[in-house]
Length: 78
Image (cartoon, rainbow, N blue to C red; front, side, top):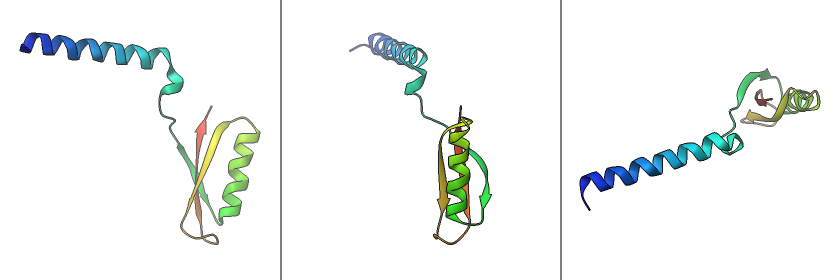
């Protein structure tokens, strides 16, 4: 395979992949936004669910190392 043909093949594949992602934005990865730190995992879950219930966020994630320790809340905003 010549270098010119290989380059053309890679270029066409890149254009097709880019067009596919542009046409289907839902296929792109969701980005979590850091919101804050809560004293417990339960408080974090309550706050995260409040964001979802008020339709400010699609989903949430509480990052904690222990069930009784502080938890960091991140959400996927609408």
